[in-house]
Each structure stands twice: as structure tokens, then as C-alpha cells.
Image (cartoon, rainbow, N blue to C red; front, side, top):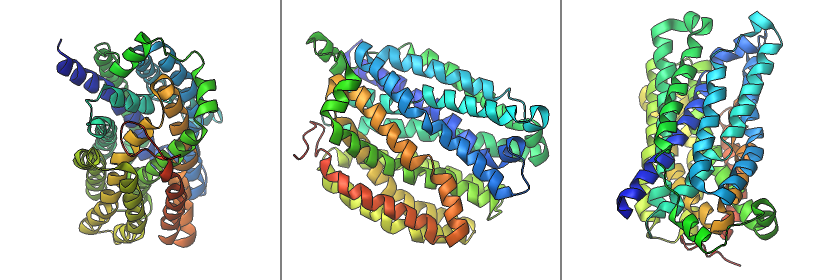
Length: 423
């Protein structure tokens, strides 16, 4: 197989696992209004909803541990088999969730078992998205790293879009009563089938050229976790904050807003599905449109400008969505999605370039997942609470505060894929 064909096979096989990962997480997010009364029955609707959002965050809580374990395996033994193993592990808790009994059937054990499946899923995906980004970065042709890395966004958003289609379509077909009675299980069975397809594709995965070169030179790290904590502290902090801002804004756009449209604004199913399509299509395609430009410009100035524009866009975008009409919803999503996806298109390749190849999988997996735990996972619940207290100003202020903190760390990011960053 020639080099270019081998590269594209690897890019495709690497990307498919993130589809499964994000399908699961977004199915859980979209099903939150259905799962809340089934697993956390309460007379207080907001309390029940926040408890279920808490489990959404719990899936993130275990991810740094999973990232550390899977990342070390990836640096010690290679990217290929590690990423195959991660997608196999993902399929098990996804399938198990579809068989869980509810609170009405077994009481307290129902939310406890749901928590176990979220922890198991969180652990298994701890190295999935970050590992995929690393593999894409190391497989890319020279000068095209942003274009390659952002395939992870395409795949993840395709997974989210499939999740939205599955949940919205089933809700329309079955109705609220049948969805609560057991229809909510169907998306998890569909996810298990997607995982099986991803497993088969990853058998065709090739090792990344950069890792192969590292292995041939005898430079494979023997203690990657210890090495990354000793040598890359500032890179870890910069990666966690920068990727945290990306996740923070992603979950506001892709999770919090669709759920608010359903539970608080009571928009029609067609408008909610339209919003999910617009949001996830934007999150998937816009970074790819920006990526060729990112590969030709200096990354740090690009990140500063797009980070500031994202902060400026959030409040007017939220206000537009609050108006409730389909046109206003679409306009609000696009106003926020354009600068947010421009930031995303540069932050993922730049974060990968923060770490040297021998410890890149470990460094990226641990730092990325710490950022997701601290700054992304809490977003749906915190934004819902802030909106209940302060209206649209609350979630908007949350994004701006996170953005201001991020700006202080962007100076540590490299300007190009060569990995050079300021002292």
C-alpha cells in the first residue's frame, strides 16, 4: 500500500472511534429530560434534571484516570492497538446502559448502576478523543496537521448528529410516554452496533509515522506519565485550559442549548431537531473550512483573535435563541458557532504540538481530560442553574470568565506544527 493511501486509511480508521464516543455522550445529554424522572424521581423538576446532569459530569470525572492509563499504553506500545482497545472498551458500558432497570423497578440501585456505566464509559474514552487527535496529528502530511486533526471534529459531530437524529426521531415516532417506557433504550443498542463497526475498521489501523520513527530511534518513553509531569508542566496547563475552553463552548452550543429549547422554551420537535442539525453540522464542518487557513498562518495570534470573538458572540447568540422562532434559533447558533469553530480549528493541532512524540499521547490525554472535567463537563448543569438565577447573562458571563482565563495561557501555545513555543 503506497504511503498516501496508507495515510488516508489511518486517518479514517482513527477518526471513527470518536463518532462512537460522542454518540454515547450526546445520547445521554439529549435523553437527560427523559432519564431524569426515571432514575432521579423528584417533585422538583430542576433538582431531578441537575442530578442527571451530575451523572453527565461524573463521566468526565473518571476521564483523567482513563487518559493517564490509556495514554501511557499508547506511548509505551503504540497508537494502533491502544486505540483499537479503547473502542472495544467503549462498547461494553454503552450496551449495558440499554439494559438498566429504572428507579421504579429497583429503587436506589438504578441511579447507582447508571453511575457505574457512566464511570466505565468515561474511563474507556479517557484516551479516545485525545488519542485520536494525537494519531491524526502524527499521521498528517507536513503542513496539513490542522486539516487532519480536525477530522476528529467531523467524526465527533457526526456522532452527535446521529445521536440527535436517533433521540429526536424516536421521540417523534414513539411519543413521550413510550420513550419513558423503554424507547430511551434503543439509542444505546444502536450505539453498540456503531461500536462494532468502529472495531472492525480499526483492525485496518496503521501505526503513526512519527511514533514508528521514535521507536526505530529507541526513544520510546519508559515512564511517560512521570516524564510528562516533570518536563511538561506548563504544556499540560496550557493544554488543559485551551482545550477546556473548546469543550466549555462546545457543550454550551451542543448540549445546554438543545436541552433548554426542549425543557424551558418548549419549542417544537422540528425546531429542536433543526437546531441540533445546525449546531452539529457547524461544529463538524466549520473547523474543516478554517483548517487550511490555520495551516498557513501563525497559530497563537489566530487563537487570541478567535477566542476574543467567541466571548463577544455568546450573549447576543443566547438572546437570539431565547426569542424561540426557528429563524432566531438558527441565527443565534451560527453567530456563536463561527468564532467558536474557528478557535477549535487551531487549538487541537496546537495542543498536540505542545508535547514531544515520546510522551504526546500521555500528555495530551491527561491534560485534555483534566480540562474537560473542570471546564466542560459541568457546563450543562451550571449553565442551567445560572440561567435560572440571572437569565441569559449568567451563561454568557460563565463563557466570558472562562475565555479571559484562557487568553492568559494561549501565549504558551506553539505557532506552528513544529512545536516551538515561547519561553
